[in-house]
Image (cartoon, helix red, strand yellow):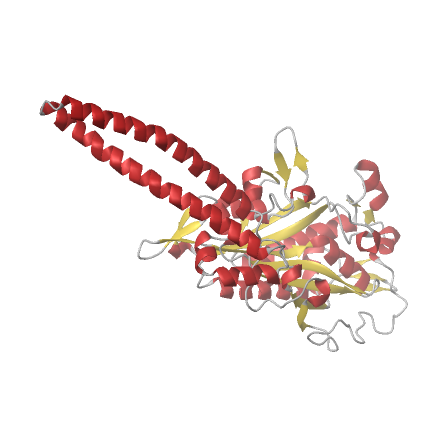
Amino acid sequence: MLTLKLINEQTDKVIAGLKKKHFGDAEAAIAKVQEIDAKRRSTQNILDNNLAEANKLSKTIGAFMKQGQKEEAEKAKARVAELKEANKDLQEQMNQAQEELTTLLCTIPNIPYDEVPEGSCAEDNWVVKSNLKDCVVGEDTVGNWTANPGNDDAKLPHWELAKKYNLIDFDLGVKITGAGFPVYRGKGAQLQRALINFFLAEASKAGYEEIMPPTVVNAASGYGTGQLPDKEGQMYHCNLDDLYLIPTAEVPVTNIYRDVILDEKELPIKNCAYTQCFRREAGSYGKDVRGLNRLHEFSKIEIVRIDTPEHSAESHKEMLAHVEGLLQKLDLPYRILRLCGGDQSFTSAICYDFEVYSEAQGRWLEVSSVSNFDTYQANRLKCRYRTADKKTELCHTLNGSALALPRIVAALLENNQTPEGIKIPKALQAFTGFDIID
């Protein structure tokens, strides 16, 4: 949630940022916020003056009585009673204005950093790095790259490979639950477990404390990280208990620090978590949802940081380097994109996506988003830290997938297929216990 301080002190910057995110009528939304805030502050001033007057009069009543000035004492009592009655109405107006203000602020997204490119959709994102020789910055191409030189015919998509080697049963998942809930078996299940352990081990080496959080959260947690009310329709809701299945471990892990004041010396805090993730993905259809490309339930390792404003940009760089290192160790072709304003999430100030190339599908598959939310989430969470000079400031929050498994599995199967079977990357062999799926 944007702070009122930012909105009131840097109004033009906020409006420009909202326009970069292609948010509705930015001027009208911010004008409405300022109108309600001005009304709230004006009411607060009247209330404060009334309270001060009532307090002052209350002190005089006893003195009037001692001096025998009964009439003056009664007048003072009557005025105090009048002020108390007026204050009830003023407090009600205050509460109503605050509720209206909070509701409105929750509908306004975070503003992007200056380095976020202009653009309205995925086609406007910038390719900032790739490990493919012929994939240049700003270009959507994979050049002449091939995973299997001399084996050009080995380009089965992962859903066919999964069936051929009995790794994943999509039909069985439909029987048990429905589309988007695959059943992993045999070496497919072992590959999943190996990736989870590999990613957690790498996170531990990088200094992240592992967390095992709940996979259902209350509405306050969804609100704190910005999934509610923005993405309510995308989350599975347990109506009877008013709980939500998590779309990512970001939600429970970041909410550990809701309503907490940290010491500056504790920052940055670095957490990681493996969880199952649940997303309704309403309206998804076509080739983008085939096989593992888009699931309703999937495994993911998330990294989360809580940091100071001064250090959060450095934390973001370190997180990007961590995710890139994972893809390098898995020998996967990848590229990194800086998302344009119109393709960023509701809550992020800056976001980089990592995509791996699927040779069999001839397309890029997103496997990670690494975001800095500035103070936007922290303001909703009331996540703060105490500085060395005892001032209380809002933290910066950051998170990223490290990594989401479905498309990693898809790329590993498709890009490593050979006539002998599917080769396992060296870095993963200690975790799988085998070097080939045959």
